[in-house]
Amino acid sequence: MMLRLALASLLARALTVSMTVLAIALSVALFLGVEKVRTGAKASFADTISGTDLIVGARSGSVQLLLYSVFRIGNATNNITWESYQDIAARPEVDWIVPMSLGDSHRQFRVMGTTLGFFEHYRYRQGRGLAVGQGALMDDLFDAVIGADVATTLGYAVGDPIVVSHGIASFSHHDDQPFRVAGILDKTGTPVDRTVIVSLEAIEAIHVDWQSGARIPGQTTPEAVIRQMDLTPAAITAALIGVQSPLQTFRIQRAINTYPEEPLLAILPGVALQELWGIVGIAEEALLAVSAMVVVTALIGLMATIFSSLNERRREMAIFRAMGARPRTILSMLVLEAALTATAGALLGVALLYAGLVIAQPLLDSAYGLWLPIGAPTPRELTVLLAVVAAAAIVSLLPAYRAYRMSLADGMIVRS
Amino acid sequence: MLLLGESGSGKSTLLSLICGIVAPDAGRIIVAGQDITALSAAARDRLRAERIGVIFQQFNLVPFGTVCDNILLPLRFAPERRGRAQPARAEVERLCAALRLPGDLIGGRASSLSVGQQQRVAVARALIGSPPLIVADEPTSALDSGSQGAFLDLLFEQIRGHGTSLLMVSHDARLGARFDRVVEIADIATVEPAVA
Image (cartoon, rainbow over the protein chains, first blue to last red):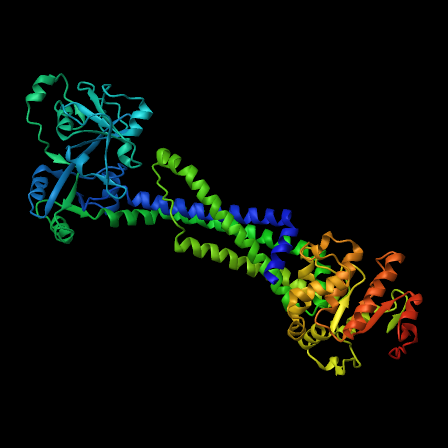
């Protein structure tokens, strides 16, 4: 009966109570939403590259290698010679190996020279592969496949010519050998979207008349001659490796890290991603702290609502007292009401969250490549909800204690 | 028994003391043969729940509860009374019928009732489980003079039926004829502490 009376009491003050419920609901939805985006961003981030067991580059730091090879941020300090690459590729543990040659750019986008194996083996978001949305993969030496962002930002269509610049943010163009857009990849939400992909040989081809970053004066090798040349690269920037069996990963990693011919570094992408997330993760924690503050604000609002309702409820409390209710009963009724309000707020908040997710999920995926899964609440989310209800009960102790004191002082005299 | 006194003369405070909601600074209060000043606050609350039915001047009911909720409310705190009032729902219906309350009101919200109906619900609530004492604080002051008489008739009829004592407070000396004993609060010896 007390529960029914508490519910009826809340219904009788439907307007103020619903405002409080709404405030709690919004704060809970915000908190859980931030939590969702946070975990979603983390998962999307960790899913930037999957299916690759090792990334190999010149010896530097693991985060740096990850940044330039996967995220196309920063530059390699050194290259891997083609001989070393061949050596590694020939190891029996290696299932597949994809070379990457970086260092040139097209407008603001990086150009990557690689083999067709890249399209076959690069995986993101739990094993999804790259898909060509329009056109086809590279067929000719001067064919380029561009990422979805490159196509939308620069307005390219299949068949358009593009000119690659030497270096990054450079004014010296390789305009003697224009490329042709052969295909446009579907949006992935990974750095591939912002990459122009050409063949490894094409990178060599555009550097035929160049030396030490500058064009050799007066020398122009005709395209027909270039096509006849041996365009095997002397060096590559990095390579992605898939091993035969996961058990061999560490063995081959050690072999590469102790490679005697030149200083190399092999990293496990997952471990390096975790390291990198540790650096960028501070911002997400700040965001989470801010939304936790919003929840606290809503709970203080709840407390204020109970406080302001106490005066108009003195009569009701006097009736309860006259019926033999102990002051403790009055206290627990107010706490019960607060917990019910918070429960309603938490449930509405979850409903708002799911409604928001259903609407925002496709938008976030297409705009930011951020995939937020919609599933049953996680144990962590349920803990948050329970904590909100518990916190509401705790903050309501303050006004409830005041009611306790008031009901002791008022006695049976009905003040209204 | 009727306790007569002007407003501000301390009637309500006396009722609070008898009901054991407030404790006196000094002296003893004996209710139903028990010195309640010797009891703990919790025991006094329990005694009040079990032994005393309370009727206020007005606003007797918890407005958001149903009539049935209101009548059953004291049983929530008094297991012995609850035991006497079984089956509770039938007891509510019996009391409502005896107090001429239409049966279809029982499930309705208390705030939807007229003042006269609310006071009768308050009587039903005071009577349920037959406590030995009913304390009423000017229960007719919110009623017009016509319904005052009808209300008191019903109240006395029920009190006789339940064998319950009634302690009623009023400022209206005309009510005295209906009571076995009438006490003027002014006649009660008040011992003022000597001012040194």
